[in-house]
Picture (cartoon, rainbow, N blue to C red):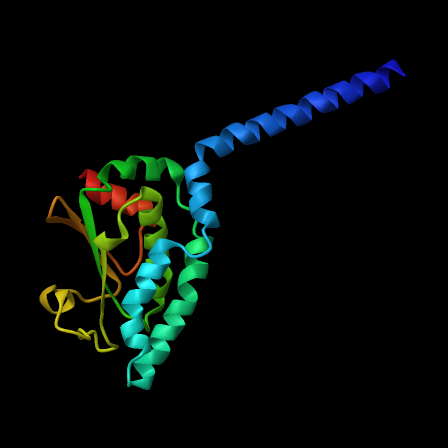
Length: 189
């Protein structure tokens, strides 16, 4: 009998310790948990508003590509798990950066990387209005007369990061380490 009582106490202590550890971990990540449970993240809404021009296009291929991209935005955003230590280091730049993306709604790299970018920017708490998306067609010609016409690029997406109004660097087509680590390298050089 005493052994049973002893094991019950040990089991209770272990369970309580586990719960306390989880609670302390959750308190530190509360902000990120709240961002993840948002039913319709602000960055996704922002991207959808930029894509709505293409979705309502008279060109059926343009509309189809935009709809396909929009369908992948939120699942890609929710699936991405950025490194929180790197996010903490990026947060100090949130009011000093602007991000301009040249992408193709038809491009698998754009469809993969932009939701990840949106997640990192949301975790940094950068205002969504500091993200711009400039669309190009399959010939990599700008859909409108905008930034994509003025910037030399060969691959999409091209993510140009501005720090204090000056181009600090870019991520082209794919990340080397991860979205947040590549951004940190650009901003800390």
